[in-house]
Length: 125
Image (cartoon, rainbow, N blue to C red; front, side, top):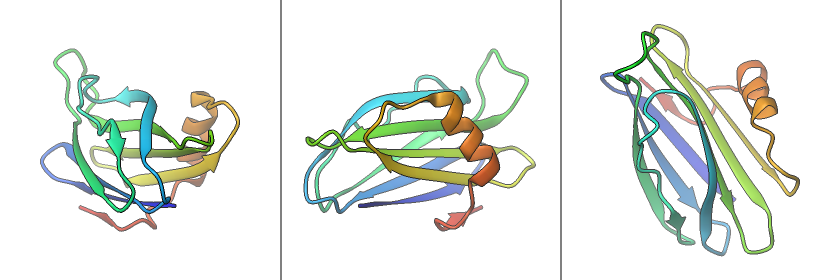
C-alpha cells in the first residue's frame, strides 16, 4: 500500500512517505510522544506521490531528546495506514507500520512500536 523511509540527522527525523494505494491518503490523526508537537506532516498524499516531513526531536520544555511519533492516514473505504517511529537520541531507531480498519489505540501502537518495531524499512542514520 505504502512505503516509509526514515533517517536521523542532527536531532531530527526526516521521513518520506510513498503512496501506491490507488487513491489519495488523508492524515486523520497523529500522536507525538517525544519531539516537537508543531511538525508539519503531509495532510494528503496523492496516489503515486511521495511526501516528506521533518520532525524535530528537541523541544524547549523537554530534557529528553528524541523523535517518537505516529501518523494515521485514511483511504475513502475507511482503511487506515498507521506508521510510527522511534528515533531516540543514543538508541536504535525503530519503525512500526500497520493497516487496519478498527479504531486506532495509541497505547497499543506505542507498545507494538517498542516490542515489534523493526528497522526493516530502510532506516538510515
